[in-house]
Figure 1 (cartoon, rainbow, N blue to C red):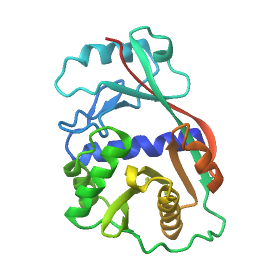
Figure 2: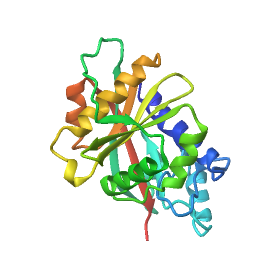
Figure 3: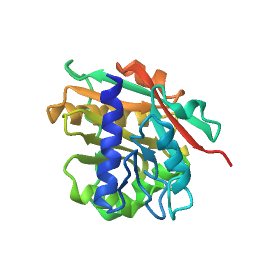
Figure 4: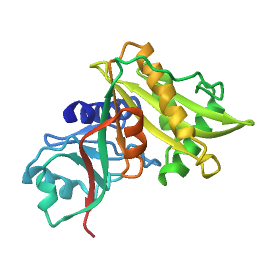
Length: 238
């Protein structure tokens, strides 16, 4: 199951890079040197070898080369003194076979208009503390039927966001679920998650996956998600 969860994320990053004409690939890994965006500027699908890590060091001076490397499971990077651990995320999944009792929330609707894409990018930037480029995201939404974005609107203000990505194996990935400070402690993140799960099930998906922070893990566990592994992000030691 852990491999299924990681594949969904890496396939999503691959599609984002491809649709923005920024995806690069070496014999050892893929990377997205997207200018003016921190998302999804990562080295990923990296081979577990010293040669792969040497290639990262060699490419580091290249313009817009990602400063972060994301891996899952045991990897040589964990013992390589040239790299430092940044943070981990919990790889979680749940079955969509059960009948959901989730109520339809009128405040949540699918992102279509440019203004909503801009607002989505703002919420994601604030929630995750990195620059989420609206143009990069718009290119994905306009060109891929596999990606659907949703926002939570309260009194005309967009307070929360979340994305559903259905990969080539029909696995539903839940991504960038976040809220503005003004929308926290209102259950908005949970409501968006439920909306994404309902959408995924309506599109014929049987499994939903996500990558959760340590703080978010128990919240998703209450909805039925189980943890199967950890995603780790590293950077080159200065």
